Length: 186
View 1: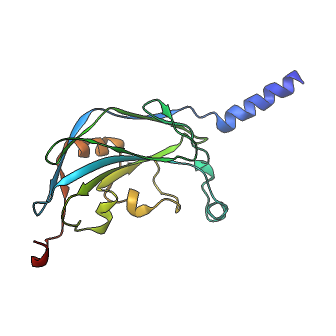
View 2: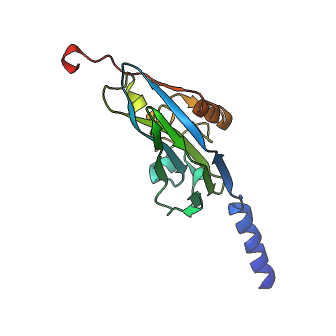
């Protein structure tokens, strides 16, 4: 019986033994450059841990390697398994300038987990020239192909290939393309 328990424990560690994965963003001032005299009133950084599958996803190429997003936390605060997406509002420090405070996201799955990050801006006037910009100006995911349960327009819009590219994009001024208001809107 003692040996059987050890074998079961070893199998469990092989199946679920991936250690935690951590993504860290350091404090940074983010500057948006909107067109047409628009102003970014609010900004967010969104984190989504990919986890779980539905029957149809399992049947259609599946997400088996993405199943289970365990120990998902942001800045040490554990999030319930069902609360897989978090948007953190950035502090406004000036016109079109916001601060991203240090962010540490940790997650674990049977395949080291996957995380998507996006940058969102809210305009006070005017509309985005490109519809998908209202959900994300750019983003990054640790998985190459998003499962179809994840909204591609949210996480694939100007998606960066690496975390390093994503971090570099945060340092540089972020252009926000807006529509030119009609005469009636002026």
